[in-house]
Structures are given as structure tokens and as C-alpha cells.
Amino acid sequence: MIIGDRIKQMKIVLVLIAIIIAFSSLVISHILIKDLSAEEKNKMEVWSEAMKTFNNADETTDLTLVLKVLNGNNTIPVIVVGKKGEIQSYRNISVPSSNSDKYLHDKVNSFGYSNHKIRIYLKSDEKIGKQAQTDYIDIYYDDSLMLKRLATYPYVQLGVVLVFVVIAIFALLSSKKAEQNKVWVGLSKETAHQLGTPISSLMAWVEILKSRYANDNLISEMDNDVNRLQLIAERFSKIGSMPEPNPCELISILNNVIDYLSKRCSGKVVFVREIDDLPIWVKLNSPLFEWVIENLCKNAIDSMEGQGIVTFSIFNTEKKVVIDISDTGKGIPKSKYKTVFQPGYTTKKRGWGLGLSLAKRIVEEYHHGKIYVKRSEINKGTTFRIELKK
Image 1 (spheres, rainbow, N blue to C red):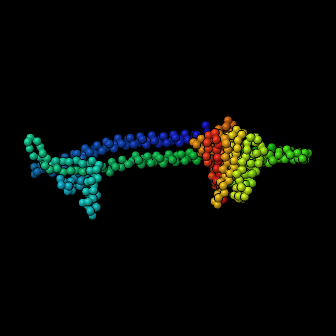
Image 2 (image 1 turned 90 degrees about the vertical axis):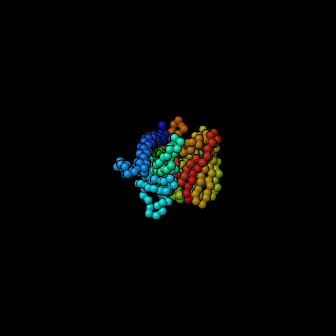
């Protein structure tokens, strides 16, 4: 399993845990809010009965318990409205000094919109064996401050959980990236070190062959391959450091790579250059950028199974240079456009899946450019695009 898949699974697990926590919190909070709301409604019904008793009281009525109930409400906002819509009293509401009547009526409308209204009939008359209520008051109330805070609490908790999940994911990605960087740097420098001795030996043997067979063309090609090995070792040694880009002529770099690969590939692989002869100067680290082009070309050749066309196109603008490398190979599914650049991803039976990952790092981190899959069709081919700033 590649590292990218493990990280993806960890992210899915973290998100699922966050969803479970959030859902559980919302369910529990909803139950608590429902119970508290029902309790507050019962309290208001008792308070309303006390208000009815207070309004119907005469000189013989003991109001001690009634007043205790009425004064005991210190949390639930209440507005008492008469039959004609006039405000009779209110409680637990901060009213501004100006436009107080309008403010209270607006509150009444908002309370009524929430169906927080209790109608209390004050008097009754006997008519044909039935009671007919002739006077009443409406009691409008709102949720208490504690209930409102409890209602918002699960959303605050959800936000906190989300923040922690995001931080955990970023920490996971950062630790994995740091670990990958250490592995790549150690592997690269060790590879460069191990290549040093045999390359030096090969260079000596090539010089001996040159002295004995000066006119043999194969010796010059062997010399080119040894120089290429030396260049590869130099590339590996620079991984982990920040190489300084210098002004380089881009067309000559591309031509060098194409010429070298065309002599070492099957004759069934055709390299097509849609390139102008005009020089294009860009700040590059030439050995590392050649490595990027080689990786893309080798992937194209592998995708075509040693038979097809690799096309190079360059678009030169005022601010950037665009390089398209197209092949006629198997193609890449759209869902894998970004996955192909993850370390460890490969469709080959043999290989580490680091080529495109290193290419992306070289282009984006060392040259501050972009590399991505521009387009691809299954069994028709793929186009990789490199964008470099001037």
C-alpha cells in the first residue's frame, strides 16, 4: 500500500470520528433542549395560572403563594398583553429608554412567531348552560438564556471538533512529508555516494579504450553514457539542498535529452519536436531539469510499451514558458491525475513510484513552476504540462 493511500485512509477515519462525535453531540443536545423546553413551558403554564389568580383576586384572596410564583421567574422573558393588544407588564427583558413600546411589540411578534403564547381567560358568564369567556390576557414568553446557550453549544462543539480534525490532518500530512523528505534525501545521497566509485573506474577504463581504439565510434558513445552516469550521480547528490538556478537556453536542454534518449530507445519510438529554433532563456538548474524531462519521457515510453510517438511542444509568452510532452500510450484515468504525483504510486510491476513525485518537487519547489496532467484519454495518450516563470 502506498503512503498516499494510508494518509487518505487516516483522513477518512478522522473525518468519520468527527462526524460521529458531532452527530452524538447534536442528538444528546437535542434531547436535553427538548426536555428543558418542556420544563420551561410547564413553568410558564404555572406562572400563567398565578397571573390569572392575581387578576381575579379580591380582598379575601391570599396572594402570598401567587406572588411567590410570579416573582420566582427570574430567567424566562415574559410579556403580558391585554385583550386589546396593550402591553400590561413584562419581566426579564431589558427595554431601551427610547421606543420602548415598539420594542416590546416587536418582541411580542417574535415570541408569537415561535408559538410561545398562552391565553388565559379571566372571567366567565353563564349562557345557556355553557361558559363564555369575556376577558382574557395573552402571555408571550421566550426561551431562557441558558436554553439558548445550550442550543448553540453543539454547533460550537462541532466547530471545535472540526478545527481539531483539520489540525490533526495537517499535522499528519506534515509529519509524513517530513518523513518522506528524510527518506528521499538519505536514499539520494547514499545512491550518489555508491555510484561515485564505479563511475570513476569506468571513466578510467574509457580513457584506456580511447587510447587503444581512437577511431571507434562505440567508445564515444560509452563515454557519453559514463558522463550521463556522472550527471545522474550529481543529480542525486543535490536532492535535499536548494540548488541555485542559472539562466539556461531551454531549447538546447530539450534537444540534448531527446538526442540522448532517441539513440537508446527502440526504433519504434518516434520523437516529434514542435519547437521553434529561436532560443528561450529561463532560469533553471540544468541537471535537475533534464532529469524531469527524462522521467516524463521514460514514463511515456513505458506507457506506450516501446512503440509510439512522443511529441514536444513549447509555448513562449511574456511571463512564462509552457512545455507539453505528449505520448500515445495507455492514458491515465481522470481520478488519478493528482495521484500519479504521489510517492509510491506506480502501475509498473517493478519500480518505486518516485519518478513523477521527484519531478513535481523539482519543478515546483526548486523552480517555482507547475507540472500537471493537462489531458489524458484511455488507450489514446497523455499530455503532461510544465509551466516555468521567466
